[in-house]
Length: 342
Image (cartoon, rainbow, N blue to C red; front, top):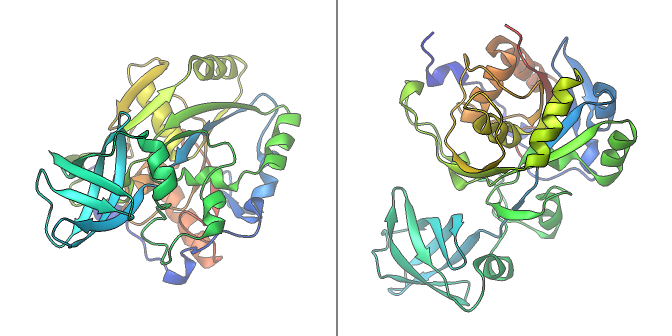
């Protein structure tokens, strides 16, 4: 089957794009997709889990990755960090009236003088002041980078709500949004029920919001993202499988990390880069279930969930979610998916 971009399109009423988080994380709705569509709340998640099941979370933390300022010439610039490169350098997207040349100095947030070293594909290679670690500089001077479909500036509430409660490894420029629905009491309830937890780290890059620009999906090249799978997580997954229980990924980022680490056929611990592009027809190695938000039309994330649960299943689920006025995207509601056995 030849897949095209149009196979993953759908019409979404703009008012269903969530612009702010709900008062409580677990107030979100949860659509159980199989064996039949079932409208729940996220606080009902324990009813879908069994003792011995394993939830795999992405513990990445969102950086204050957006910076505004000027070039030497006075022209306005907006910088979005893509990823740190060591303690004082980074790859970044830059929005400006004219692309800055190597050697250009950027004056950001009234506090940082940053040098453009050159280009690295679609990104700019930047050098930050060596007086302090890059992450610490960004935390002090940068701004939280809300997704482009949230039509407002980040506020005080976003500082906590656009991070998961278990975020600990800074490196992402977007939140692993399926995890935003969990709070400490829900995690405690799941643990008391005998549901186990494990962690991976996948640092989400700004490329996650880049549109797919080719109709023939075989021509699409995924952006790369750094990930780390601990040995403890590999052991927990092996024990879960051996006991006949389920591995449930919390978010597409957790799933991409595990599937990338299992490309050899065996799940391997360690740190690496992933450019894994998952389309229908892909054979999943690790995950049995997936908790995920609703994704943008024509996005690689919609393609991933269609591969996991089945294209027709996802189409029905999205049509139902739109009809029932679910909230979409980063601050929206969630789905619980089971791997398609076909």
